[in-house]
Length: 423
Image (cartoon, rainbow, N blue to C red; front, top):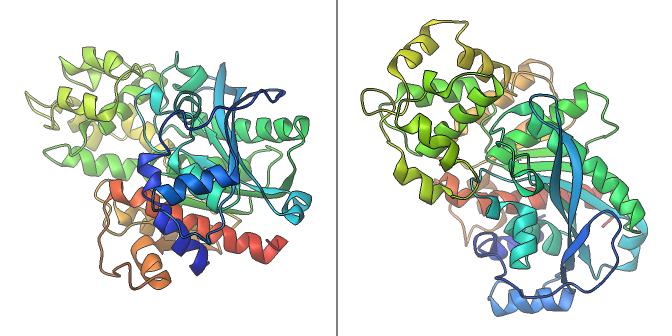
């Protein structure tokens, strides 16, 4: 694990910068049930990473193929929705791996606002998958599955159900099952290992997905889950945000209010003040990213210049039947007992999703009978793997933590794979 983490950690900056655009054009390979959007050989991928100064010359790097795959899922209202996702598989593997088959990692992406940020859209338009697929696939050797979610990709005509557990879990489970069929139809050999992960909203989605798989008949079995920095205790997160006088990232909470009002058939003006209530449908229509949205919103939480209605916030804290209070409670995903190992990967210095949320989640799940739920602090884990590069006392913030959390998670999954199926 230490060696793979050292290698991945060097590549972590590519999580942010990607591989550029139009680096390789896919060939005319016939694909059933999807579209080949990227095709890098192992040599081409290694050259890119070497040119970026991201790896040593003796590093093992796999190529990858990225496929955009359409499928059908179900939204919060129970309606079928045409959606899409990205499957990235490694190429140039040893023969023994091809015989055993690829282990799958379902990787739910973090919070995005613009459709151009969705995994399949990045792959199709930029010629390269998201940076996390570089880490998980080209270095880790996993088949990486990235659903776009409802609201993005082929479902960009829908509102995005931001941190709403049912539709996020549906989108993930349905994509996993679609990928399994796609793999059989296109001679891609998979083994029986399925790992779940995701960062920020993706961490929440991964936890919601695990809960759905364990509690419903999905036909899936999970080997291990490693949700990263997710807002699992949504009610407590909302309590904290609405108690503060200012909003650090107003677009996040505005998006929660917008999605929850839509899903619960509530008037947006009952929770959000004007002029913002009238602006949110345009701000969240998939054309703008967070840096374009935040300046158009106030950072004041309530009051005459605030984002949220003072009357609504007052009712939220005093009325047990307040619809938003009920909805955030129902969509919290920490009060249950997973039956498989769960690693809660989180940076202790997270300034958006507090580390204590993972502490609460681990403690609650263990108290409810879970036998293998533990927190994995990113700073301490990286320090243990490479003390000359990392500090045990570092307090890494939410925005910086993402690539490093994927480093840790890929190492954990690779160790499990090695000990169970031999590569």
